[in-house]
Amino acid sequence: QVQLVESGGGLVQAGDSLRLRCAPSGRTFSRSAMGWFRQAPGKEREFVGAFRWVGDVETYYAPSVKGRFTVSRDKARNTLYLQMNGVKPEDTAVYYCAARSTYSSRTWTYNTESAYDYWGRGTQVTVSS
Image 1 (cartoon, helix red, strand yellow):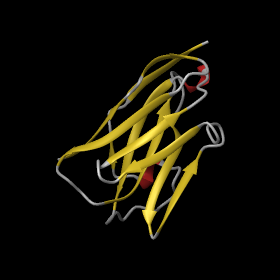
Image 2: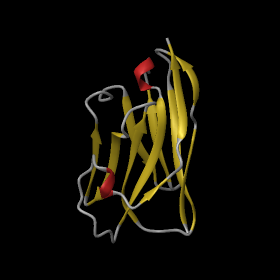
Image 3: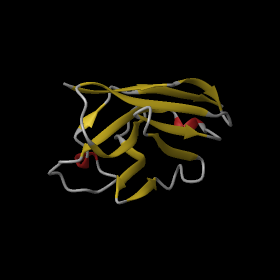
Image 4: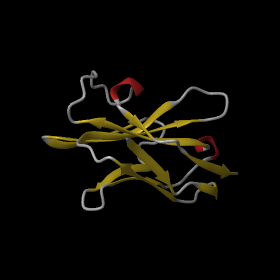
């Protein structure tokens, strides 16, 4: 069974930095892209950022986090990161990691949940003002 495990969440103050990590556990699988989504209380889950490595490496960001957050991958450690700088209270949410299988039949649209095959359970990020 494929599992994704997020870590690194916590309580921080506005303006601080935080780095989230996502690593697969259980059965290994070949991936072509990974992404971060978040869900704030009472809101729909929304796209944050994604990293795709089919041919050239491509990164994508939601307008609300562009310039503040960075998605990166450590291939040797098989880990995806979300570096969050200058966090704001509106960044408070549960952050989810998602992965797309290399052999996925899903339509690729980097910012939609349906493009990803596997999901983690999330890690809470709370930003105080």
